[in-house]
Length: 190
Length: 190
Image 1 (cartoon, rainbow over the protein chains, first blue to last red):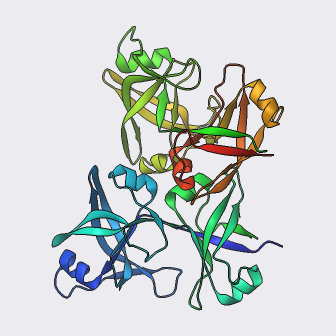
Image 2 (cartoon, rainbow over the protein chains, first blue to last red):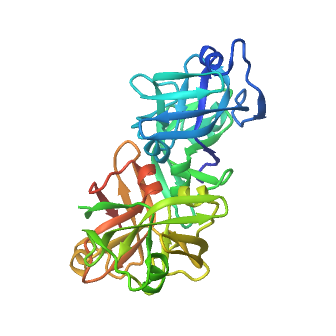
Image 3 (cartoon, rainbow over the protein chains, first blue to last red):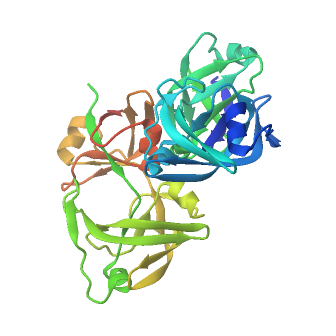
């Protein structure tokens, strides 16, 4: 029996360092949590910024909290093309030589030298679920999505931690290509 | 040995009936061909229109020629969401109960009652190539795309005609999700 897990779709968003948060929103600024996300400790905030590349600006990207050690911008390839930025496909946090963009907030802007990526699609999974799913020790798996736009995603990264909520994260291009919606169940293929 | 064919990526575009072309561009208007497309007889034109839904407008969609019996708007799901339209996944020409949009040109506009779709991904193939590929008589096949965003598209429609140029047509969401570029070779899986 194939192991099933729900889909979580990531719209374009920004993670900020505390230093960059203060440049954009003012000295001592703290993020305003509006909603917990499925991954424990992660949350949506009330704060938004604009992200600019050579060909245009994406307005009102949501900031996700908490603050991180390094600022990161996650776009779908459609978004990146809209503003003329060529982003590499990366796991979150792997930002060396990723794309440059400008981030603008109400109190200032930042010329980010690197930090804009397309998120590599990935599974968050607990060690218990990883055992049941048979993916212990695997770096990547394939995942089947059913339905009229059904497909099999290869090269899906496996991120196994004790504090995970087990789900598949896709960006909006990937979700649209597969015709999936949030919380739809998909199958790991071994 | 798997059969390989190139990818052709369809950006959002519009096909017009002669009647609708004249409403938008003026009485007796003829399309201005700028470039032949791979499919014989099909061409890009100099003419552009805006497409509007409840939540916004997509500016400057290219019109593809020649004119057709019925006006059709092909969007990626990302585009459809941008203007607040819910389009069904359809083969070209299957427009019954598809989505409503407004099309605006320099001389007028049209409230299209139906005609906006997400194109069902499909292969154009000649009867000769269909024999070699082993897809004669098949309605759909699966297609594998390699690379870092590699995946297998299921439910790919097969459109076999004498006048085809053999290629896989994807929309921009699908191409972005798979990380493919125009003319990249992909494999039919039987």
